[in-house]
Structure formats: structure tokens, C-alpha cells
Image 1 (cartoon, rainbow over the protein chains, first blue to last red):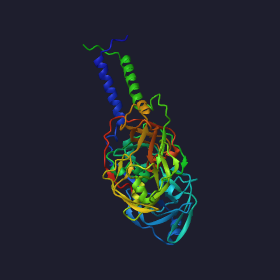
Image 2: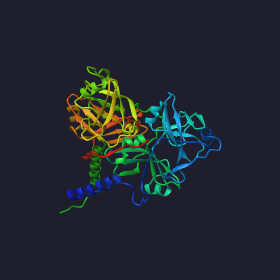
Image 3: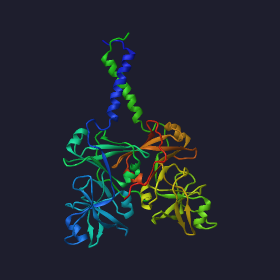
Image 4: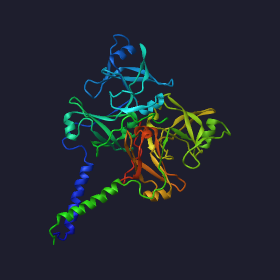
Length: 242
Length: 242
């Protein structure tokens, strides 16, 4: 049988439940996440396969490291190429990221895509280039038509199995990134990529970094997305014309 | 004296409080907001005072409308100028927005700022240009040094008093804009500008629109920000180099 309620006690219970509820929603990285969070802005760049590299730089040419990147073994190369879009517009100094890969892929911000006039560039995870648009590349030793491989890279975070366990996420999960500062933004779809060799690092492109004014950012928080998100694939567009 | 608690009753109260709490946090635009929400992407542009317009286009020149903008009386002009940054880099075709104003002001995305090499461009509301950097402008009749007036426009929403009342906000309040789509983003600082003549319209720049892939966006929701936000002024930066 129901007993009469004591108001003070009920209020205390409600306060406690709300406090727990709040804590769950606003929790920063769970305790025990030791790795510092690094946010890296990837400017437009290109990955090349050995064959395409030779076409552009000549037989026997070697890719040389300008500076190492945060992920082990990766580097920004001294070599750059020119990318030419379908409207006779081009961007010079498109940096190659090494090492060479099994496929060639160009990663552009939508601002770059608009400048070049390339249509239907989708947001994709690296390597998932089937059916994407191509472009011409020009190097000191030759010109090359990429039949496909132009993408806007989906925002993602690299992490080790250990960091994934600490965040309570798995490979291919979605997290969200909150950037505080003078242009505060929450990015709600950050793809998780787990590999034992990965160091904890979020990759944004220049549009994303400029939109949230990352350079002025105060706190940056990465946490699991609140609900399951269906990843929409292949919504394509031309970006916004400037 | 405290009475023993009935568990079922307490749980019901907690559920009800939580439901109210949730409703408050996730509420979309309040019922009764009739005006459709328009999100406008402002590409880089310039506002000119009559004197500066004459310097660039010649004595007696008239600003002509290419197309009307959503806000009553505003238009994209047929006339454009060239903006020249401090590193001998320039952007041509910088469109003038009319009508002429009491002051000249250039609104750029940070991607443009980086391209031009202008340092310390702050995020500002339109008209708040004291202490901002300048640039050279070139028109068909002359060249002009703007001593100040280069800003990145703070994201903002125009609305009438009636829409403001419906949203429960006032001039200078902060709202947040949630963009769903294949690059979902919540912009947490949208400045409210209220005027009886304003139509409901959010203004983003091209970096912001490209970051959230606005062209693919599904639902876009505008609502009052959850807490008071201290607007940090004059954190400046050079954007992200591409």
C-alpha cells in the first residue's frame, strides 16, 4: 500500500537522480583516459600509389619526408603536385603524404572542391574511393588522370585499442567533438578508427577547423555520441561557392 | 518528521521530473513559430560607404542591383572589387552588397583570410569594426586603402520582434543551430539580431556552411542556447593555412 510521501526526501532523491543524469550527459572523457587528445588539421593533400608517383616524378624517384606526422611512420613529403579541375582551374602545391599506398586519393575541403569546380565529391573514409570523382594531377615528370579518388575525408579519430576501451567505443563507432572558444561548435559525427599502432588524434579539414576557429579554441572534448547514428553514405554536393 | 518513502511513487515523480527536464533541453522551436527558417550562406563580400564607392567606381557612379537579398531592401550588387592582402595576394570578384552604408566593411571566411595573408582578423558583429585590420581595395576607377573593417562575421540570426517573442529570446541573445545531414554539426553561438523589419534568417559563412555540408542538410533547428554564454570578444587568429 502506498505510504504518504515526505517532500524533503523526494526532493533529495530527485536531485540525486538529476545529478547522476547530468553527469552521464556531460561527462568528459572517462577517468583513466591517459592519452592527451590531439586535434590535427589536415589541409588538402594527396596519397599516391608507387605507379602514379613514378608517372608524376619519374622512374626511380623517391618520396622524401619534409616532416613526420603524429601517426607512426606517416609523413608530409617534400614533394607536391598540381591538381587540375574540370574547369581549367588548378591548385598548386598539393602536398603528398607518405608513405606511398596501394591506391591514389586526393583529400580536399569543400572550399577547395568549389574552387576547382569538381562535382559530386562525397564525404568518405580514407580508402573508400569507389565511384568518387577523379581529377588531373601534374608533377615535374608528367601528367596523370586519376579516374577516381577525390573525396572530402570524413572527420575521424585515430586511437589504440586501449584508448577505445577507455572511451567505451569500438572501431567504426561514432563520437562527438565539442570545441569551445569564440566560435563554439559540436561536431556530431566523428568516426572511430581503432588500431593498436594508432595514437589518439582527431583529424579535421580546414573548413571544419576554420568554422570552429580551432586556433582560438579553449577546451576540446571528445565523447561517445549519445545515440546510434545511421551513417548516411554518398550524399554528395559541390560545397558552397565563394 | 520524515515518513517512509513509497518506492513506486518516488519513481513516478522522478520520471515526471526527468521528462520535464528532457523536454526543456531538447525542445525544438516553440510551437507557434510561424516564420519558416531560412539559412543563408554569405560568401565573402564588402559593404561600402558612398565616399569609398566613388573612389573605386568614379564620381557619380551608381550601385546597381544584381539580385535582391532576403532582407528587405538589401541586394547583391552587380559591381565587384578586388581585395589585396599584405603579401601581394588578392581575391578578385569580391561582391558589393547594397545599399551603401555609413562605413566600409569586408566580411571574409577564415579560408579567405589565410589566402590573403591578413593577420588578426577577429569574429565581429557587422558594424563593430574598431581596431580591426584593413586591406587595399581596387575598383575600375581607383585604389583605396581601408584602414580597418576586415572581419569574419559572427554567425547571427535576423528576426522580427514577433519571432523573437515566439522563440523566447531578445536582441543580442545567443541561440544554437543544429544542422543534421552527412556532416552533422551544432553551432553553439548564433547571435540574435531583432528588428521589426527583419525576416527570420540565419547567416553563415562559407567555412561554416561547408563544414556542416549545408547543401546536404536534412533538418535544421534553431533554439535558444541552454545557458548564458559569455561572448568572448577579440580572440583573433589567422585561420588555418591550407
